[in-house]
Image 1 (cartoon, rainbow, N blue to C red):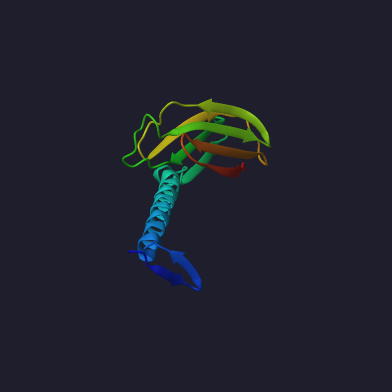
Image 2 (cartoon, rainbow, N blue to C red):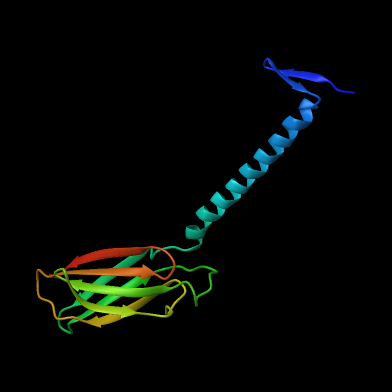
Amino acid sequence: MSRDIRYSGCRINGIHGSGLLRQQTKGAGRALLLSLALLALALMWPAAANPPSDIALTYDGSNQTLNVTIVHDIGSADPSRHFVREVEVKQNGVEVHKEEYTSQPGLRQFSYLYNISAVAGDEIEVEAKCSIFGSREVKLRVR
């Protein structure tokens, strides 16, 4: 038994129209679901990683040392994969130290000490880079 079905003035001979539409809708639904899942994964990846949230700089002129305290909370992440991998120190725009690390000494906060000869008026800039995502940069004017 063949039925003619009309959709918006179009005639489809011998095809059960609702089944055809259901099949097309099912494929579109799967594509939408897959797209949303991929988008969610893409948005969650950087959320699992975070750049350092704070950097505090203290310069001791009598010892000519720069104390860099970094707050980089890795939470429950794998510390062998998620850590501050690099700290770059510039003095008046010129790189004076660049240290690469394979781990960080604390799960949340830690400090590094660098020898730097600076005088009043010098600008010291420090950038700490996360091993997975992002970085933070701060500046200090020596007094």
